[in-house]
Amino acid sequence: MESTENLRLLKEHEITGAVAISPGQGGLPRLVITTPFSQAEIYLHGAHVTAFQKNGEPPLLWMSAKSLFAPDKAIRGGVPICFPWFGPRTGAPAHGYARLTEWNLVATSACPDGRVTVRLRLPDKVGEAPYSGSVEYIVTVGSTLTLELQVNNHSSESVIFEEMLHTYFTVGDITGVSVKGLHGVHYLDKVAGNALKNEDDDVIRFTGETDRVYLETTHTVEIEDPKLRRIIRVEKSGSASTVVWNPWVAKSKAMADFGDEEFHHMVCVESGNVGPAQTTLAPGVANTLKAVLASRPA
Ligand code: BG6
Figure 1: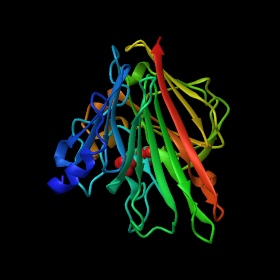
Figure 2: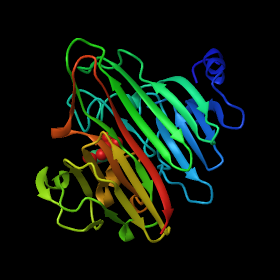
Figure 3: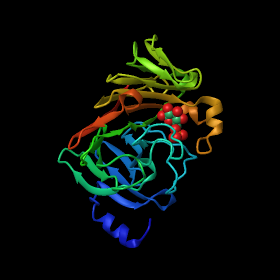
Figure 4: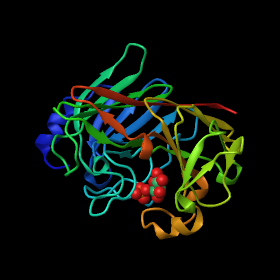
């Protein structure tokens, strides 16, 4: 954390018994949130939710033991925010600069029903993207985890961007996992050179590297995990794209911040607007990408 003065200012947002703020891994500022139903952690670096765990359940979000925690590196696991672009870009960071930027903490609040809300804002004028506006991220922690990315175009011209809540989920064993809710949806298969395919299977199962951008889908997706006897539910609004990713063997080995065997215990089911569904916002217009992450016993 940069200075004791910064820490003192951040601590003004603490709420006794609900929000504690202190240096986390790598000394980066971190909020630890406690509710009657769950625990969560958020780093200001990337506005990155690195943990969410309901009482009596395994962690919902997966984190790599190899993740780096440094100002110029993305955190591996949790919920990276990809903005204002998704995927690689020549001469610029993959998945945009939002996940590499320290966001400002705007407010914290505790509701009478026990939920806790944290509001963060992307500092103005970061990066060199063709983007002008205000970007806020509202995280609500309760028995579910609600994530809202709000983009407001204050400029006099339309702005175009991609966005993705790149959620990493914990699973017991990827080979037993099935993902439901994408049957009949077209997708770009990144593992097959972005070939356009149709999802013919009722459920998606994992037998190798999987990297798919499902198009024109607003559907709720469920992840069935027999090993952890849990069903994870990803309900979304303001989102037309869903990405499903597991790096499997070779890609895991190629990533320095990802353990060789960790792919067994994670799956990404991501909500956003990318590629043909990128967002165009007219001047003065705002929009919200929202995902509600929930779980129940299987
Ligand atoms: C996924 C992409 O969303 O993110 C994959 O579809 C990519 O292609 C993965 O490999 C991880 O990206 P990064 O930049 O965090 O390593």
